[in-house]
Image (tube, rainbow, N blue to C red):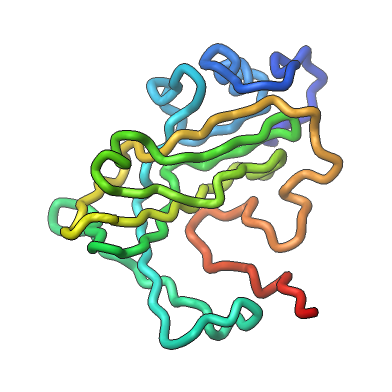
Length: 203
């Protein structure tokens, strides 16, 4: 089981950013779960994640009321072209999962950001970048990336290629892990629609 609590002398001891050696230690100690794992993706102070095999556009038919799920955008599957590439049109927002499933113990937190390589091409890889302690606690979960094309022409993206970085931080542990929070995305194995309507409160 992921994060089996075998009592170990954990290598994640102090607060701060995990460097490459500490990332390898977190993987070995079970504080970090990455599947499939490619050791070449470990960077000096982060681990890179790759673009998954699916992508979705968002289609709306009218105003979106955040409290009304019926008004939410529909996820529209973007089929790859003949060469297996996803085409992102100018100004388009595309949701796509990471290739890897990620899991963090309660002793880790993360931040996800796009890479300079894509930014220099006018491609924004944005998302709510916080990965909370306890995310993916039960077998790992994908992260949903929000990809925006800021250019005047289409951009072609290749599944399986590095697209973002996950920076990891040692933490003091949380009283309630993310996976125990209501309406969370901690068990997602694919892109899902927003769950915001589940907890919008009207004053």
